[in-house]
Image (cartoon, rainbow, N blue to C red):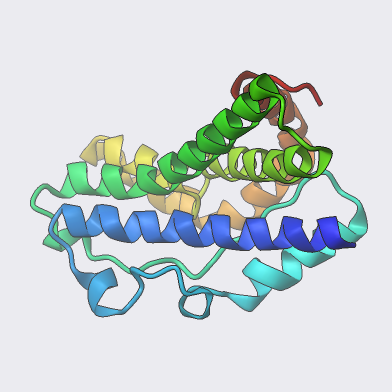
Length: 205
């Protein structure tokens, strides 16, 4: 039970860091919308979306599924304020993913150092592994090019103007596509996460 609560806490703060990274990327490229809205903070009360941050992850955890994901309230930004709209949009879309990967790398290094220096405890390895695995799941999941995930924003930013009608069609069917991906295609992505986890931590699952 304690490990499950820690899992939820890690997920919650990881998605918050993900969203704050979006906000800082937007600010760096000239948009102060997130700053003015008070969203450039790690205060959970500013970011929690009760269904995506708490209820859905808890239901998934209790169901025993290996797929645990959630989200926070999206940090607002206005791409028209960017000094370069396409570059700014790409930066904001990728910022959350990069933040999650950085967390995974950081705690992977902690695990490797602890094991190498001989002061790793089972509890530390277990908790640090949860942080690494959760952030890898969030990073890879958000790279999927299905709206409203970050991967779709990268795809649309790179899409030539004459193909923008494709975006409207894609967004119209985004929910069924996302559900189909989660239930039928995610299993093909899991091995990638396992490989990255081993690469970052030196451990095997």
